[in-house]
Image 1 (cartoon, rainbow, N blue to C red):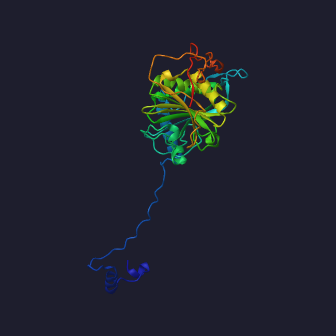
Image 2 (cartoon, rainbow, N blue to C red):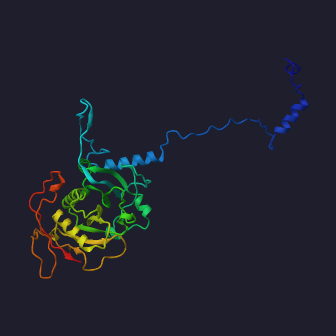
Image 3 (cartoon, rainbow, N blue to C red):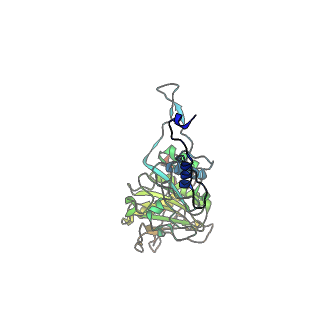
Length: 355
């Protein structure tokens, strides 16, 4: 078909040469204009959100802390609803006076995860005794509370006796944790850190022991039961407790809201030693520390000085001529908790000295 029939101009030799000149490069080659196709936008499908990544890490932590590798404790028992036969319902449980939250933190191998208020997800913070350090937990407060908080993980929250038992039967005992790890159990709403308003003006009783796994686990379990069962409470004085696994000296702490009522705080210490059935013969130490860089005044708070291991267990005695108070009393301190814990035997006393 002639060019005129298609409606275009006829292609002449002059026009062809002119077109070649316009598209020729310096080396004489001819360029051919190519129209590039628009770039296809890359989407973000199949990339998990930050919350999803955080939840996955928290789940992995929980699985590593459980005795059976599961991510959550067993479900509560179900019974038939007496009002609607054939319909299941959760069995009634026994409420505690306060709700409690269990935290875990470690300096081991887990990456930073952002804060979350959801049980089982990362809450925040690296452990307060740096890895490999034997500085007491309370004396090794991190320079940035946000860094400490970034390593905490909320394991769960409970408000009944049965929920408490499910969590403590599901979690590994503290002696099975990696070194430089901690469990924290605090009243819900109180963060296990100095800066929390409930802890800012208080202190802590610190029990130390030289790597005795059986004693550490027993003391932690008995303390947790006494704590949630109000065996140690002075009103609303106690905030929570911490167990810390270290390379040489393990620690258990009981945190208090105040630090000035010496008589009340010493009363808590007496009940603590009596409930845990420990003494200096167990090679343990006990002292009161402030939740600050200040030190308690001398000769005010009761203390136990660590002594060499021995089969000797001190018996109950009357106050000595020096006036050092002695602890005495019957056993059965957990009887009111209602968990059926068999402790057996009477409580053995422990000499308490004023520091």
